[in-house]
Image 1: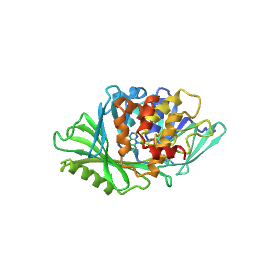
Image 2: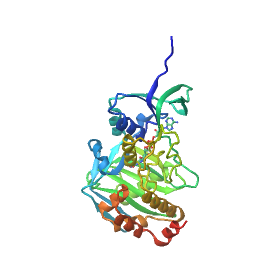
Image 3: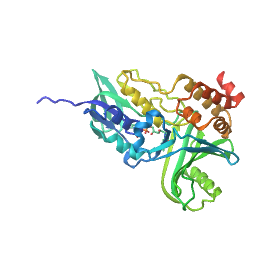
Length: 364
Ligand SMILES: Cc1cc2nc3c(=O)[nH]c(=O)nc-3n(C[C@H](O)[C@H](O)[C@H](O)COP(=O)(O)OP(=O)(O)OC[C@H]3O[C@@H](n4cnc5c(N)ncnc54)[C@H](O)[C@@H]3O)c2cc1C
C-alpha cells in the first residue's frame, strides 16, 4: 500500500482574530481543505474590537454588537465631544467574530497544538508541531506575533464588564479616552456603555513596562468612585498588550508565506487599532497575487512613527490627544483614525502636535 500524505490548500498558524478572518474572507466560499493551528484555548477568549464603520467594514454590519454616533476625549477639566452619523464607532466581540468566521463552505481542520517550525519542501510546506507531528500545506498564513520589544512602548490594558444601577451610563455616548493625571505616565479610561446599566470600563496605559492586574483595577475603581458609581457587579474581564512599534516580519521572502494580523504590520501602532486594518489587509490579499499589501500608506506610517517617538521621549499626559480632538470634527477624526484622512485633515493633525517635540522627531 502506498502512503499518500495529505497536502492542505493552506495552513493558518494562530486561530486568533486575523487567522479566523483568512478562513472566512479568503476561503469561506471555496470548498478547499484548510488546516489551522492554535496553541491556546481560544474557546474561553472574548473581548471587544472597536473601529469606525469605514466602507470596507460594512460587510460585517450584521455582527456588530453596538454602534455609537457620539464619543468623547478629555480629562477632568475638558471634554471634547465628536459626532459622526455616517461612520459611527462600532464593536464586534471576539466570540461573534469566531462564530461568523467558522461558518463557511470550506473544510477547516483545527489542531490544538503549537507550531514549532515550518519549512518549504518542493512546492509545499512541512509544518512541525510541538508533539512532533508533521502536516503539509501549499500556503502558510502566519499570525504569530510578539507583544514586546526591549525599549519600545506598548499599549497595555485591563477592562471590566460591569452591571450597575439603572440610568448610570449615557448609552448613546462612549468615552474613547478620559485621561487621568498620573505622574509621568499616560493613562486613560475607555468606556463602552452597552446599556444604561451595563458597560465595559477599561484602564489603558502607553508605556514600556506592564503592570499587575491590581493596578488597572484600582484605576477603574477610582474612576467609578469619582463618578459616584460605588456599587457594581463584575461580569468578565478583558486584558491585553498591543505593540506600539512597527513589526520586523511584515513581508516574507517566500511568496507562499503570508504574514497576517499584527505580525503582518496591520496594527496602527500609535493607537493600537488593528482589527479593521487586518480585515482590510486580508480583503486586499484575497484579490492580490502578492504575499504582502500595504494597509497604511507612507505618510500615515511616517506620522505614526514621529508620534510614537514623541511619546517615547516626552512625558505626555493626554493634552496632545485632547488638542488633536478639539481641532478636528467627528468625521475628520474618524477618517484619521481609520487611515482615510485627506491632506487638509493631516495638516490639522500636524498643527495640533506639540511644536518643539514634534519638530525634533522629524529630524531625528
Ligand atoms: C483584549 C484585547 C482588546 C483589543 N481591542 C481592540 C480594539 O478595540 N480594536 C482594535 O482594532 N484592536 C484591538 N485589539 C488589538 C488587535 O485587534 C488584537 O490583538 C487582535 O487579536 C490581533 O489579531 P492577530 O490575529 O494579529 O493576533 P491574535 O488574535 O493574538 O492571534 C494570534 C494567535 O496565534 C496563536 N499562536 C501564537 N503562536 C502560535 C504557535 N506557535 N502555534 C500555534 N498558535 C500560535 C495565539 O495563541 C493567538 O491565538 C485588542 C487586543 C486585545 C488583546
